Image 1 (spheres, one colour):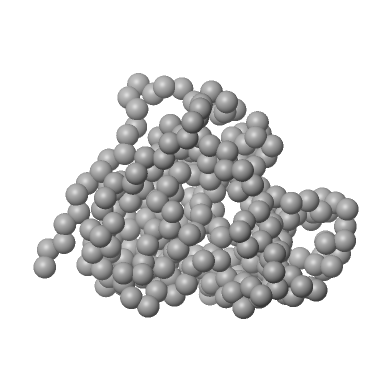
Image 2 (cartoon, helix red, strand yellow):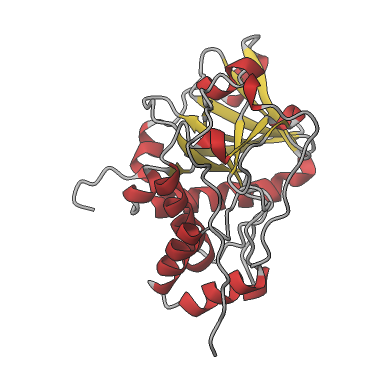
Length: 290
């Protein structure tokens, strides 16, 4: 690789020194997230790490598959530094069984602090289909709309990278991208805020083109002109441009607005001022010529 510092190199360099048993027994261990099948923890002595623990042992095979897919995505992204400048995936280090639980040990994504500090340091989910939006997702974290996201990242470049990233999942790796989530944050050694794709537990290999999807529609602005352009362009690199257009045509209905009671942007630490002209989503009709 000509001495290139790849994401795989970083995985090897940052292999954790803390055995899972030590992390579990340590009083400095604390929970940072919870889902339907497991919880995510970190530790005061190893805050660069996150370890995801299953609620039940029966999911071991499924979590082995999740570990493998996430590592595969990391390895592919090592060849795309222009994408990982704006969207990345946490490194995964190991997966193991301890007593009745399964574990995945990975790089921890630190919350985007200037957004989440008033909400207890929760994970910040980026709902790019929404403009003015804010909601507490309970144990999952906080969800914010595009108007807040664009205050902490270059929104245009992020959407370009997101289109390319999703095309890589679909057409290079043949992953369906089911239920993948996108959060704002940083990792140890970097203060650059960007999107991180997380939670690959429900993703699988696509057997048919119609299995491909965007995951939860709140994250992916699939009617945005910039997203469409770069999603299709990346698909064309592997001869899948027409397939990409078919998918866009199938999912071309604009995302339903997400509404929550009492959502109020004034609660945020980020300075959210009214722009001279609000940046609304650019939508486009996609047609496929036979």
